[in-house]
Length: 165
Image 1 (tube, rainbow, N blue to C red):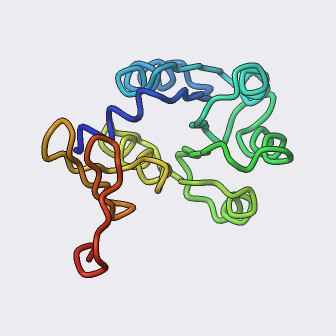
Image 2 (image 1 turned 120 degrees about the horizontal axis):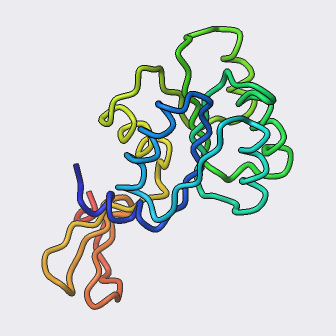
């Protein structure tokens, strides 16, 4: 796992919404290792309230929950926020949810049971190009892999097209 990507996660806040206490506690403990702040809620209603108050960068939510399920919560959020990364977690691979999830612009979908590897992999995939991969040659010289650009002392070094490939 790229240490630079993991270091970048520490700049973000995540909201974990899961109704099963044992699973939520395990998820929160794992997420605290990777993220700056981890918020937690036991249902979609509390999750939505925490979202409104803290505006986390990423939401990890179960689908089936009491009071308000994950899809209802995300539907309310998506009415005015399409930028927050949303990852849905469920024990069911139910096709009836798939269309709802596509229409809500969900960034990723993970099936339970969750393992640390599948959780981290799903989070990194959901971030897409928001995380940058830099290849460091020294403290002052690095190459940005996603932008295909070389930097020295944070100044851009012009590369020919052939060098970028």
